[in-house]
Length: 119
Length: 107
Image (cartoon, rainbow over all chains, first blue to last red; front, side):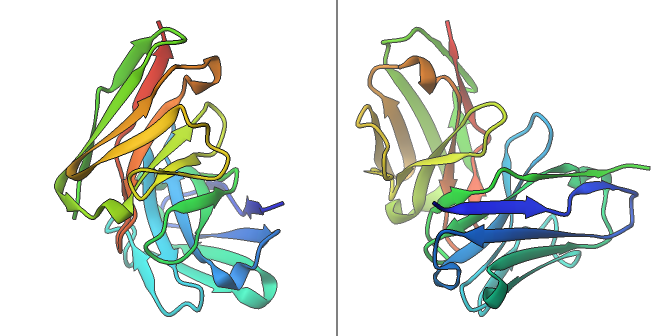
């Protein structure tokens, strides 16, 4: 059974940092591209960042470029999102999702981890 | 960047009725890169359709996708109680983008 389990969310002050993790199991992690997608309370889905299987291709939404860094550790079947200079508008439920490759639909999703940016 | 606009914002229908959801792109999207997702309250999104018209694994055949270029449609032929949810279209090219969603609610 495919499982994606996010962790690392919480309450953080504006301007501070947070690192999210996503633990994958039930599939060959290093065969898949991975993504972070967020959803602000009561709002729609926003793609945040994606990374290819070998980290050779990485992309970011304009809203997070220069502040967030995506990475992965295939030996640990894990995906990460380092979030710096957090803003109130970064408050959201953050999902990790897998896709067969960059340029493929998002076939599996975790249940999300909530990030709240507030003083 | 490609902007996806979904309509209507809310669709009020009864079980058994047909639902037609629209997704319009600001510029042409390769049909290979258009997907639809379903999201129920408190749950993660679920992939329904990819490549504009291919059903994902386990998706009932009452769900169908069509369209090309800038206009795409998700059709639910006969609404079941479990189909009332929010639906998002997505283009999943190099910079993925989601539409703002259409809520299908019980009339």
